[in-house]
Each structure stands twice: as structure tokens, then as C-alpha cells.
Length: 339
Image 1: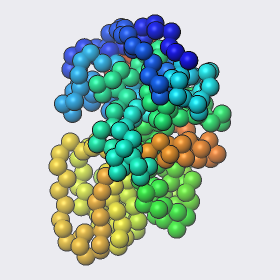
Image 2: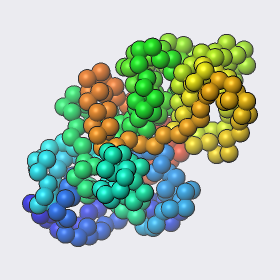
Image 3: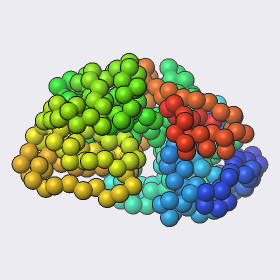
Image 4: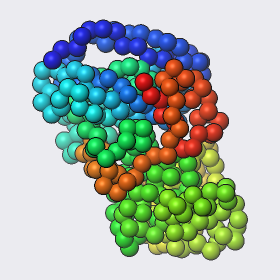
């Protein structure tokens, strides 16, 4: 089925840090392997804020942000056989890959050097419609509400992927640094895997919520005594925060062979002593989003176990208000735009 050819309408950034303004573009003919999605919901991710401000130096203006997209299939290319018109689907950070490199052939399309992001040199989800390679479009399980599912497509997979890659299981002891947009999902998924979960936060008032999400232990990370008490106790620590810390203390919290994994990006270079890494065979790593196969798995796990984002909803027309609120960290915990 071919697209109607009508223009796509959304809200675009026209310069670094600028307010988003109404914007229209002609998407051109629908490609044979593309799916067009009529957007119902789109999450606001901190990555969108970085792109709007061009913090990473990769933004090209004007562009429509947004990559946590839920909607329904409105058109399909001739070679698309796996979806039906009107089916509820989702689209995350990645919209395409080369399909031919070592990583694509290994099912790790998220590591493809030629990967195309949904809203980098491509218009994203703060709009009424969007297009992507059908391989990166995902069916949404019926059990997941759209507003709670949207943030899973980037925030959820960002924390789910390292839990799976590091083999978290009921014998694991997992720490989550930061109880926010990523952290509140990491706690839920770690609990689903049966791990003992320790939540770290600078805000003591988040203890009750961390425990309600599934944390077995809460550590106020500004209290030296509390941090010392967890020394040598964790197999995996996932840092979700975009702030500087004394990372050596978290290395000390790891058991031998434990790993500190970054999914949030601290503003300053990470400084660590080598000896604790060597003496305990400890590791420091990072983790991006997951492959389409891992995304599908995550959505099924979330549906089966009731994992969903805590959201604050905004009309699409209120996008600038929502973006500003996210900038000021006043959203608990993910903002979602709705058409």
C-alpha cells in the first residue's frame, strides 16, 4: 500500500536550543520496506534535549525530535508482510541499519556503524506521522498501555539490555544509581529477573518509592557510612545519571568480577584508580540501546510482568512546555506527548 503523499506535520527545532515551532515536510514516496506510523504517543527523552541543543554536534536543522513512538500502521511498502493497517506498533531510537555488516548479520543491528537514528538527519516523533524500516518497527503487546510503553522504546531498552548482556539472574546482586527516568525502569526489570536490588540516590525522600518499585535496599549516596556498608556486595551496578560522582566508591561496592555499567553520560571524564580493577578483576563498561530482537523481548517481558514507565502526559501542542519541564527535572519520571 502506498502513502497518501500528504505532508507530515510536527514540531521542529530550527536552531540550537530554540523553541520548537510547527513544521511540515513532504516525506516523498514510501519505500518498499518502510512502514508509516500514525503517531498517538511520543515520549520525551533526555537525548532529544541534547539533540535540540546540539550538545553532541550531530544535529542538522530543522528537524523534528522524538524517538519513543507509539502509533498505528497507516501505510506499508510493497515488501512489508509482517504488519497490518491499523496495528499498534512502536519505534525507538533506531530507524534503519545497513543490514550487511558483521554486526547486522549477528543480530546486533544497534552496533551498526551505518545505523540511522529516528531523529538524527531524519524527522522524528513530535509529529502526526513518521516512517522507518519495518525491521525496526515493533508490535506492541496488548497488555501495555501506550503512554506507559512509549518510554520503554528507549529508556526501557537502555537499562534492559545491560541486565541481559551481563546475565542477571536470581543469584545476582544489582545496584541502580539514580531513581529517575531510567533508574525507575532499571529497578523494575532487575526485580523481574529475580535479582537483589540496591537503589542509590542523593535524595533520601526517594527511598519509599524505590522500595515500591522493587528495591530491597536503599543507599543514600551522599552518606559515606552508607556507601562503605555496601562495599564488595554487588555484581553489577548500572549508573543512569548524567552527573559527576566519586566513581571509585562504586568500584569499591562491586564484588570480585563485578561490573560498573554506564548508561547515563556524566559531564566530566571518568577518573578511576587501576588497582581496584586489577585486584578484583572488576570492569567498567557502557551500554547503548538493544537490537530489534532484544526490544521485542523486552516488550514481552514488560507486558508479562507489568513493567511500565511512570509518566506525565502532555498534548502534542504543549511540546515546549513539556520539554522545559523535562529540562528542569520536574517530570516524574517520563514525559509523554499525545496526539
